Amino acid sequence: MLRNREMVATKLQRIAEKARIESSCRFTSLFHLMNVDMLRECFRQLRKDAAAGIDKVTKKEYGTSLEKNLTALVEKLHRMSYIPLPVRRVYIPKPGSSKERPLGIPALEDKLVQAGLARILSAIYEQDFIDDSYGFRPGRGCHDALRALSQEVEGGRVHYIVDADIKGFFDNVDHAWLMKFLGHRIADKRVLRYVKRFLKAGIMENGAVSASDKGTPQGGIVSPILANIYLHYSLDLWFTRVFQKGCYGQSRMIRYADDFVVCFERESDAIRFRQALDERLFMFGLEISPEKTKTIEFGPFAEAKAKRRGGKAATFDFLGFTHYCSRSRNVRRFRMKRVTSRKKFTAKIRMFRDWLKANRTLPTDELMEKVVSKLRGHFAYYGVTDNSKGISRFAYEVRCLLFKWLNRRGKRGCMNWEKLNLFLKKFPLPRPRIMVNLFAPS
Image (cartoon, rainbow, N blue to C red; front, side, top):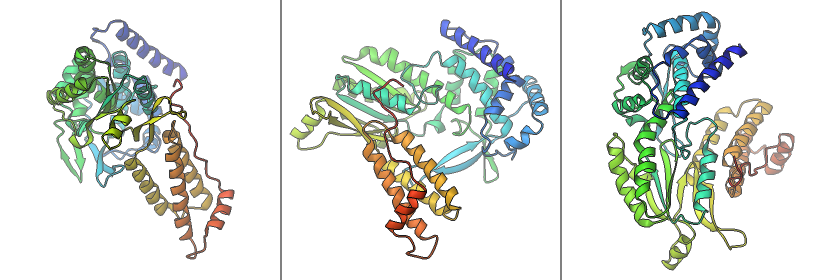
């Protein structure tokens, strides 16, 4: 089994190396990689508790006859007789909003095939993507994007920020453009056909199937890499190879999926970018969300200029944090600092409250084990440089919610703050602390 995994990894590495060396190479023979070894590895990486699609098949059920099932699946794939099922649409709460986010859950075999295609596409396109693209990429994450932003802004030559968000990006990806973009690197028709089949598979909601003429369903395993490919050609290459060359001052775009921030030295470049952005994205069926996009003065002189006008320096939100102008402890140096954004903070507290309300009857040790896990997860993401106030406030609110709901497990008024403190000595909560240094290498 280990040898098979190594063989799959070796083949993908060879493809990656060829893609890196030959930037204009179009790969004609890729689909042979969709074999039992590849799909077995994809199966191993599936979550055990992943929701089932419309086939209602779970990982455990499929795994009882794994080799037989995989062999049959590979045969269908190579006969081109495999037809993806429509994704099952569910809705999940959207953090910081009363709205819900649609999520598409593929059937189990569709997950395996999508995972295999995603690995092949990633091996090729990881060599092409720009360094400042951070979303859904191996070895990269939100903290890396935040670290790059900190280094850029505090470098001293950033005075304007364009904070942008693409409106309904995953729902508006144009299939024709996406297939053209894939054609730049992939000439294997079987790979292209299966990507197209997944795009056209449709959506099942309330027992009815609707066609999917555009967009990539959020929740599909292959969707993240397809989204990055789409934005690579429609946005990243345009900015780095065309727009940036016409800038009078320094500029840099840092993107995480469809959420991106562009730093500028000159106001004229920032204004020109904001105007050109609408036209560029319109070509590919996309548009900027006006309420989530703004151009602001930001940097070492922004605070002083705002004070002279009788106001405060503008802030912007990126990846769950509100970024604001400040100074170092000795007040000599400009610092961009950050705190958990109000929208995300409210959403996280609401989610914890709803979870605690629904699970308050769990055995005490099990309940507190999960509370500790949730707190650690929150600190692992939001515990970044300068955000001690944000995570401390979250820890305080969690204590208040625990007091409220533990008090309702018994006789009303049975719990007071003194008893809660004794309770938390037996079931201690993790202390809020900074987990990520945004000024140290990742």
